[in-house]
Amino acid sequence: MRSFAVTAVLIASLASGGSLWAADRSAFSSSAAGEANGTNVLVVGIDSRTGLSAEDKKRLHVGGKGCDCTDVMMVVHIAEDGRRMSVVSIPRDSYVEFADHAHARHFGKINGAFAHGGGDLTVRTVEKATGLRIDHYLETDFTGFADTVDRLGGAKVCTDKSLQDPGSGLDLAAGAHQLNGIHALRYVRARHLSPPGDLGRVRRQQRLLIEMLSRLRAEGAFANPVAAVRTALKLRTSVRTDPDTNLADLMKLGSRLRGLTADQTEFATVPISDFDHRVPQWGSTLLWDKDRSAALWAALRADRPIVGDRGIRPSMDVPVEIAPASLHLRVTDQEVASALRANGFVVEYVPRKPDEPGPAGPTVITYDPARARHAPTIAAALPGARLQPVAGHGQVFDIAVGSEATAVVKVVHDRSSVEGAPVQGDRLRCTTPDEPAG
Image 1 (cartoon, helix red, strand yellow):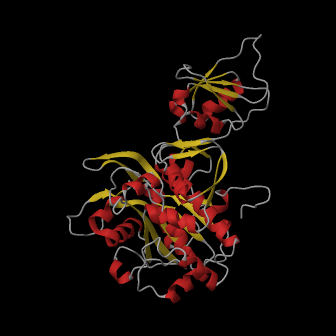
Image 2 (cartoon, helix red, strand yellow):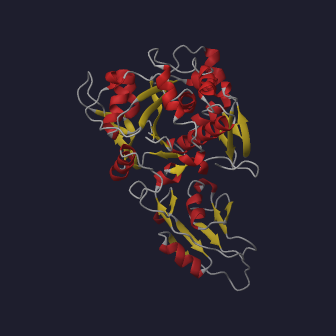
Image 3 (cartoon, rainbow, N blue to C red):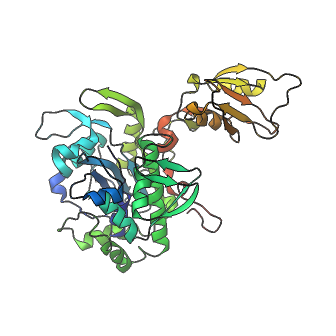
């Protein structure tokens, strides 16, 4: 299934005060959701090709068949005092129990709730899974996303390496780029990058979102009620809206958001304990980490920050995607070898021959390109080391300690935190000498 982001509909929401397609909460009543502190907005993007012509599909690079499901899902929590916004992405393949509906009680991928019962069941299922009360519900599709980005003047993204994904049509060189709507869609839909799957894709959505919100704020798009309404009017055709939404409701919420800077925003993805939980009829699914996800939702229910919460991210060590115990290293320095062994790597100390000089400069990590996904885990433990792929090198990674000082840092196998740990929005922004992150 192809994927895309709902960043634009969230921007549309915030620009107009946060209540585009803010459905009547009586329709989404839920006994499971507790008393709310602050405001919770559920933002979804629908994977549907309905109404798209062949030319539209080609233009948007969204061939294939849609699932008519929620391909992307974000919970946006706005603190009661209006001084913090927390955005939590829920991976589409999360395996949860659906809220009560016409079918017998059952579990499934959370994105399937929409196909079973539309926005109503989607909201009630999120409420059941999180214990949050959802106050507003927002929805867009491929075209809505691309149109919104264009109407808001494009999107800035930065990457420290080239990004290519034939599935989404993404092809970006390393550096900073100003993207139009179609290219922004390709950027946030890409899944076949490193690391693969949803976590990296979700983080790219979050990066694009904070860049656009920061730029719009700097340009005065939310400076006063008139500016906020003017921005919202540009977007009304890009998202579905509830015709009964009261303008006063829009402005009340919008007034609480206008002063937010990037360092007053937080972004995270629900922590995962099993990235390949196999279920008949549903295939590969994701299981939430029971304790860490519970801590995340508890923080939002209590209107607390999620960054720095040790229940959500227990270890402050550098997170790595691959378990160190699965990697075999040959190391030329005994002290470095001992430190890496203490980190959990399988280490063989192989000293250099007396007449064999070491690398001049940083430590070099030599590996087979077939193991490229594993190399960043070793590099995380050896900051500043140079990666050197060599075809046919085999399964073992060679660590040639260089003339520069080599420090070994503590790493922890925590795939959820590699791309999904709670961070402040200013940590996700592009930064240049003339543009401070906040």
